[in-house]
Length: 336
Image (cartoon, rainbow, N blue to C red; front, side, top):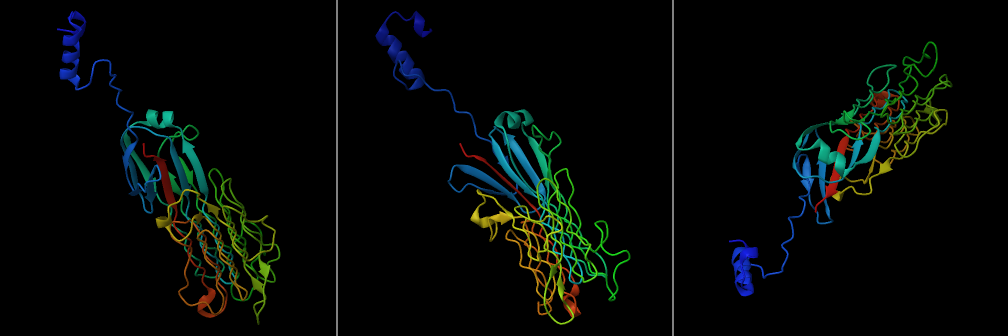
């Protein structure tokens, strides 16, 4: 019989205690809402109140149940460095954001693929740019992007004219001696230009919303090699594209990146231009430009940072540009 039908208060207390293990008058709270239950990438729960997923390679975030506000940063692949006093590659797009909890609830359980953009290869042939970085994507709907998120790769660095002859016509934004652009929507940073005494019209590549332009070539020093390629733009800093600088632009910090996600907490730095006075790597995974004394093969942009590759120096085996670093997807949400 129900409690309300019991006339004896003592009997009512005994019935409730027997059924629930609680004293009469004690309210049993409803179950708390479950946090987001998901798998994919490298999952970490370091005890700081968040759950993290790090995608160093392509895969999927699989949402099993629950919901939470989700923070993300998506980085495209870095551009490759250019050939022979080549420009540094531009850093990939650095795209941060938050998906509100109601929208995650609406998306519901499911599999949301992640594709990591590769770093662009460095140029190894006469008068060619480095290859632009690959695009990184995450196919989860957001309020502003119903089909998912995208971060484009950085532009490749401009390549030398080759054979001691100027390109015909010289320079120009659309020609290999100038840096390649990373265009919107979701564009990153542009590559730096090749450095030649005849390439005075060369420019760094243009940028999208999530990056900065590459730099124009910079005068260097050394016998028969007075010029150095321009640095690639980074997510944190870069051109104007007619500014002369051989160092790569700075990347952008991710304030919630875990130490296990690489040597740096900054991402999408530009590569340095190559030449006798080789440019410095942009902080955030970019590679230094090559000089005649650089060992061969030389390191490129750091993987899973979207850093740009370094430009080739010119002369001997150091003429080739180096590759950009691959992209990355970083996700976190509340653990409770």
